[in-house]
Length: 237
Image (cartoon, rainbow, N blue to C red; front, side):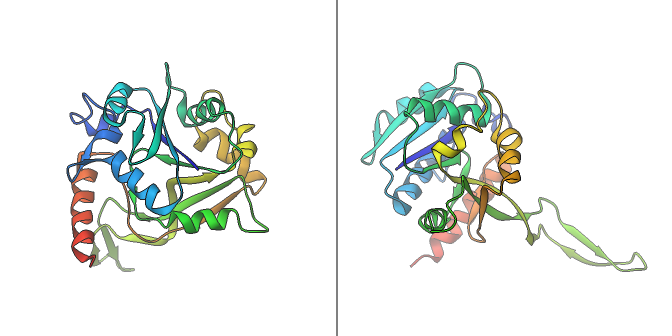
């Protein structure tokens, strides 16, 4: 099974860490984000190839991984000019000859313990088989919340709460290549150009997930996730 990792961005909010490397090579607890991702993929599903959809400093990825990592083939779909997430996926799928099997697509700045094998099983379950199954995670505020009463008196402070009934895109997808190919732009983002079209035909199914998930989009995100991962590892027998 193929996994496609979106790795073309410049990671501007992570500078200076991304001055000389793409975001997937930024270290999280002394290991690149991409290594955490591939280890997770390998644990969850029978992945045999990982394709990095890359552009900025992509040579560093190739220097690090070469053509294989822990028995998994590594390849690179290189963009000469930025194509957006939709264009990048389209290019990678076309280069692979539009694979028959479902593919995993994920953002290159996500670390998670999402049970991907269960998500994949839900995607191929009889009676569903949508174009896309999308991981959803609860929205977590970056700010503290202040609760007031009817008289505008402050009654409670809540530090960065999670809203368990408000969902955001978790950046991990199971996709049917044949179905999605006709909806992918040559240049543009799936979030703006592809997903709104699929929603009209009820072709996206969600996989809600409440467990460990983090996006690494800033230095603060990086420090937060490093602490969270260390805590989780200490709790694991």
